[in-house]
Length: 386
Image 1: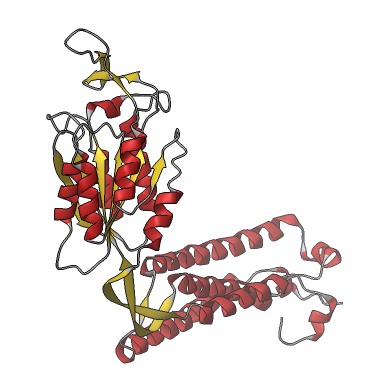
Image 2: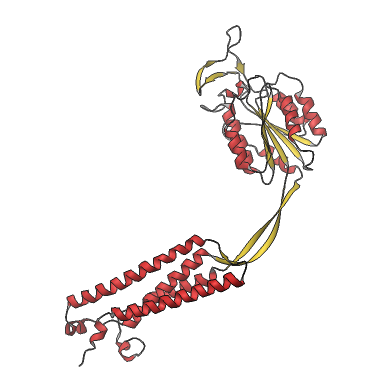
């Protein structure tokens, strides 16, 4: 019986010629389609154009495949003679081996294009954002440095955490920040950018205002003046303080704000048990505050004052307990305020077309998986795989 020696060797030259043909067809087809879409479809684009650089992987795959065929050819020659090989197995199909790799190579190319997500069909949409204007008044008096809620956390630290949590729950609202002690100071004007607001919040400290005390009334008035009369939006003020206000104008200021349609909510910071006020220098405790008679000055939460302010402002009061920061009552009250249309944004959307490349790519990968290089007995009777 005559042995067909060709089926026991990989034909490297034929493989290279076939690879060149496949590469030319792939790139000519791909570039032609890209040029046509770029010239005739004005909305055509790739969502992730950087992913197209992965096509360079195909060059590496081609080189590895050629090297693998050369290695296999040498390995078979060194393994045994033709007469011995013919008794072990029926050889290889060069055509099938090439088709198997070409299928895999085209599949990888299609999947990379799918990853870049070609898009076209631009659609313009209009999104209307609704919300209210919220000014947060934060007490930064020295009494807010007391650590009576959680060890190693002072009242101001926890208050800043509460404001951050509040911002995480807001949707579409504009927020601003006022800090106060004996005087009030606008830290941040109204903005829809919560990330910017959080950055400003980080810089807040008890040393920002030299005039000590807790003038909540002055803080309410500054919050009111921070609202723009031109913006026909509903408004709210959230006061975060230990409530140790020795002025008498806070409740009256809250009533005036309520008469102008502004809701005032309060958050109580601290415990009802008197605790000393630490003296902080360069970020370190250097002592505790004392009065002229060298007696320790104690601070405690004045809930009654904050409740009266919230009632006068048609709002609600909540007390912070530890780091739990339960602001649900505040958020529920804010959410009851009717949202006002703040702005309309127009943006473009595109229709994804990745599926036209993804599914053929997956199908070709599946096809490559079921194609085998080794010949079976039936292959000798087929003309397709020589």
